[in-house]
Image (tube, rainbow, N blue to C red; front, side, top):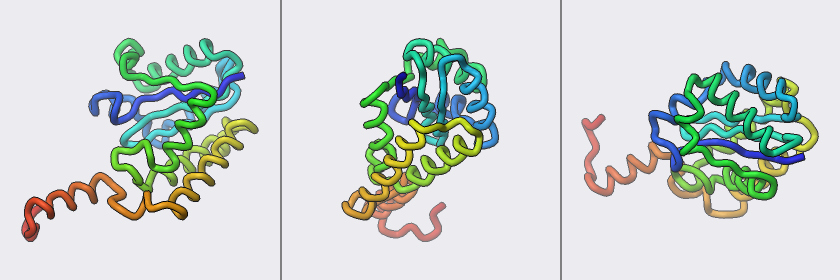
Amino acid sequence: MTVVAIGVHHRTAPLELLEQLTFPAGAVPEVLAELRASEVVTEAVVLSTCNRIELYVHAERFHDGFRDVRAVLGRLSGVAPDEFDPYLYVKYQNEAVRHLFEVTAGLDSVVVGEHEILGQVGRAWQLAQQQGASGPLLNLLFQRAIESGKKVRTDTDIGRSTASLGHAAVTLLRQRRADLDGCS
């Protein structure tokens, strides 16, 4: 049995492709149901944000699990797998776990320390639980990752600076042009 994280995000894919692959919140239950219908995927969580789409699965066999996740991502997004393959990243076992912990800590964000991702991960996991898609392994993994993300935010300075892309843009504008009155 293998934990696999498959996805694309702001550093691996062009924005246009990322927008095509990102699922609206209402579509995630269908994605989870399709993943669970796989013969090899036993658990699944879908993290779909404006900057990333990641599917975390517990699969009986890595290659078959990857094949099924790739097919679901293509079918439900309407994007042919050949179009997103060059931008796809696949992490398994310890690498997948490490990646989730980095995401929840805000280390793998457009702006390091971005705080919204922790809540987005929590909501993705909660939805997977409600849909019966997350089981013992992913429940423990996501519980620990969220706990760790909270601890990072309270015990370090990571979240004390610029915490969103919008905030970073305004800060940069103020540095370059002190008077923003009348600007939109």
